[in-house]
Length: 284
Image (cartoon, one colour):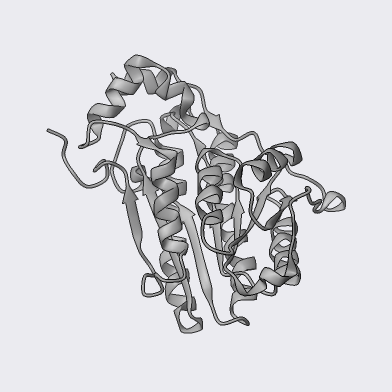
């Protein structure tokens, strides 16, 4: 049933467009306070998405935390600001533009003196078999899910190496570890995220930089709404998870926050499944 549904479902991806270098970064009206520079400073890319917004809200609950939210839509960043209500700023940037990613990290460091944690919550869902996936669709999937992680990692570690370390977290997927039909493009991209994370964790461990990722199963977010709002597709998806349900955005965000927290400093090079058992258990 799921395979039939997947064949009929179109590609669901964040419709991110590239921006030119002349439109680098603009800030929304988040409150900023340089005196908070000794508190945890976090940067979240894809901040106003389903998982990203939940992560920002959780990070904002940490005492004195500064949350820098990055995304392409200034209005959505402003709406997020009203929700999380903590020190920080919003920065408009495209994760597929390395210069803009680096500018976000650089400005954060200039404003708050450091960057303790960086998360990439940008991603897409592509349900197509290989023969039905165009080269453009495949390349776009890899760019959005894998290239963005590389750009963020590269910019983040440059600053963290000179400030005592930090934490970088990515979102992989259960489909990178468990073969599911009609997920070839997204599975390849998300498996690449795991490989990138493992190598980076080994490279930067001597600099006290931790790199980890989460691997969610199907999660109830706006991006997945075409699946979760379809009763037949939802039922089939739930049956594939050992816990017989799909995940919630807040559950994935909780795992990301756990990996980012400064009191979890002995965890690196790990893939944390937040998948209801999809990637490791056979459902009954």
